[in-house]
Length: 488
Image (spheres, helix red, strand yellow):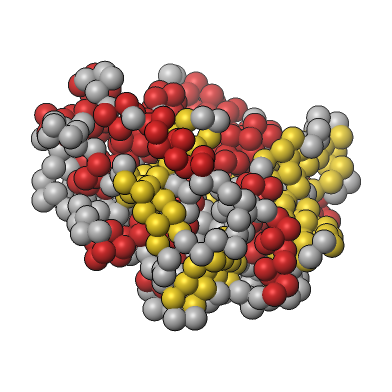
């Protein structure tokens, strides 16, 4: 085992032997490195004021992603480069093109949120292909400005590439950083801590399996987007922590021939395009899970393993017919994803066992797939109701149906009675109405501050009807008829 944490801060290497496992990168930067450009706004990964870039070498070049420093634990930087707003200014004092664009567009008001916007825009600046494909407003959805200065910030984003091409001093010496980080890839398990509290980062799946046998009560983390809030909001200090981010086998997304095998440590960012290619609606709803910063950290396996009844990926994957691969030591087993969730806070995961992968089958020739996220805000909000439907049609009849909901029960759950009301019947309005009625026997939702039980049930029923209206062409027919009436 290696007992020293190693990363590069800007252009300077750091090696730390004694590290508090739950020390956040934000606290480290402000209290220890005295880099106070990175701000604390919400301390829960919502406002983006603490945005920094974390880079890793990939095929000989650096790959950077914007992340929230407030919920990222310092040992998760092992083998990485960390960039903050202080790093953007060149050694001669000149501003980076992103900073110059912000100045020229008068895009800073009180200035508190500005460093986070600058770093989010710098991530977009580095990903030039993404900049053409991703709407700027979507990219910046994880950065909030209380002064409502969004117009000038969006203008800065549009002009930053034209300010000075090739003026990024950080790119000029990147080969040195790549060489240093690649030389640190030793295959050793990282083990650092303080006062008896430990953080482990195994480098392969066998080491991870052994660590969990030795520490069955350890807190397993992927992106820490959930556990980070235990620390910042609940002031908990879980230990030991075992991080999956260095286990290459768990970060892979592989084509199985008829679908995908998604490693438990694959992030939403890693899986978005691949899953959207199978099920376009999946891509649309994943783009609404958290922000770019959260999707760069949050993992598919973590969202499943924490067992939340309002997680968005479980009902999505359940509807797609996913199976979960679990591992303990050298033994693996597979279960249907829906059977993994036993009750609120309880999953079918034995001591020392961990989620290795989720296996998703692709659609068939007659597959209809729809997914809907209902929340109070479009961006960065928790679902009141999440619904995903897979209807397999044989001609005009329903050969099979998988209707999965989140927010309707203590666990993500299939609507089995509603499914039974669909199977074998024609895909018509009367059939759907019968299934809508059956939903009331499938679920007894609760009232809470996010939504009332009555609202949840009404939405759950109506989403099934929405699925039929969209797929049958009924909506388009009614719109065309309305247009004809309007034209006289």
